[in-house]
Image 1 (cartoon, one colour):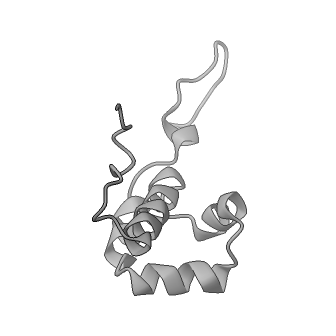
Image 2 (tube, rainbow, N blue to C red):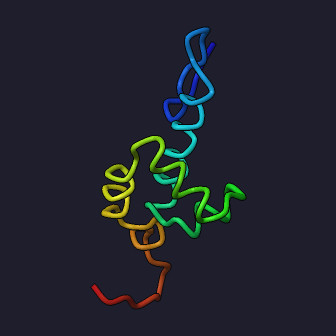
Length: 85
């Protein structure tokens, strides 16, 4: 069975907390730590997401994610488009 690298392999030892933690990490990674955007994608309220970040000890993970450039900032410019570098 092939499992994408962004997700954990589920086995008998995997708990709901493991799955929830990986989902929160996935949301933070994909949104570069943008909590508002993560809430929009997941349907969580901000207070619920912050609570889950705390429960799973992901504050440092969120901080590191925020250091990444958003995808829009690293996509190549279209022909004729002028940007400030």
